[in-house]
Image (cartoon, rainbow over all chains, first blue to last red):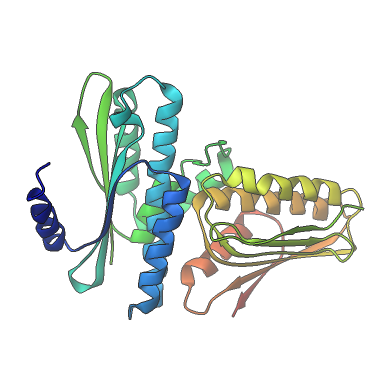
Length: 186
Length: 126
């Protein structure tokens, strides 16, 4: 990338009201740093404590969702191209009227894409009361995998954000799909 | 008798104080580890040991600022183990579920657990 392109990236992030963005390996240490940065920023911002908590909660679930995706990708195929397995991207933005937006993007196996899409569509079709019931049903019945997922994360993102989950599945190859998840907290 | 279980808190994991002799247990702080099962397994094993000879009254205080969904599953596992102790008639068990005044989600989480396990919950506003 020519050095002059950086200005365009800057302008684009400014336009999109990005507070923080990252592209690269999603590690536990990285997540710790992100939580710290976000906490420090929220501590100085004059923000409704309820919204702060919801935002933080959704942020943790979004980033951990991506972390677990990538962990399972690495387990599936250690020979896959590094740019697919070890790398993801996220942006955290604050849009107008105190609306936060969290976007995450990462590669998943193409064969898992339909299943994931169905799960999100189902979650998006539920009312808040139905979501709560679905969450409790899952909480009470699923076994926690050692990856920690338990399938609750996406339900919780929908519950806490109070908005439908937006998503995109982009065809990459016969093996991989680029999955984007977008959560809005207002 | 089980040894006491004391774990210092980190920016992703809570303070744990499980005292076998008095039956007082406390989990406080933040619980957002990526691998919750890894963190909670020693707590679950401790309760298994404690169950052999529990105090007459067992009191677990939960005072969490945040917890992630994988921790929520582990908390349920803890409550289920305590429920078994209560059912066996070995100890009176009570859950002291603390939440900050404005944190309705945390209060609701306490009610959710209360609906999933047969244990008395006291919801305490702090």
